[in-house]
Image (cartoon, rainbow, N blue to C red; front, side, top):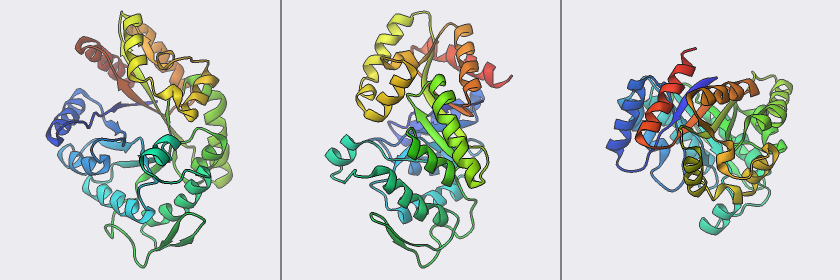
Length: 302
């Protein structure tokens, strides 16, 4: 299981670049960032990847509804060229409350929408022209989008339910997970996505799993803070379903947390479940964060 680190992109671009440099200097070779309400992550990556050229960068994830496939394909290919071919484009459906209430866009038949989106996006990422007409997505490209010559970025989909896992395994390189524990990965995520990939003749999928992590002696205090900061996630149906599968009642139940030895054991469990890359969302005090980095680097060196 490869170790990656969540990159905080809030604040100035200069501060994000410095954080990326610090993490790379510590020894981390893969950085991931979400796209929620802050800076545009792909634009940030185009700059970060030029300043820190030997690090892999991944989006976990970019919501697809506000971006037409041709625009996202052009942007992703441009970023891929800018950073020397180190991009993983993680995409997802966001959530009904966000899409309908905040963006004013429809959220009906989300899996069908993702299917149509991938039908248009994937060939354009390969530099091909497209003529696609679905119920929700129409794309006619007269020429390739983005730079003419660039490596095709790896694509993964935020997939938790059976239909989405089937799409991820059939069309893309894997899935990006959040609020999903090792028992659920082993019993639900991995079997379904592996089966879909095998049927499509694709390689074994990537399973990129993001979870909070903290090496701490104050588990009660860390849990209370974590549950407050992440309180929205149990209210979102897709994550609530994964938490129920895992037997977790609150976000801290899914966190990798405790002593150095406890966290190393939890990392081993996560790797054994089928996770191929752990997107570590490191939290805690300054000392706890430094201790967590040390444990992650120790694990990755084995």
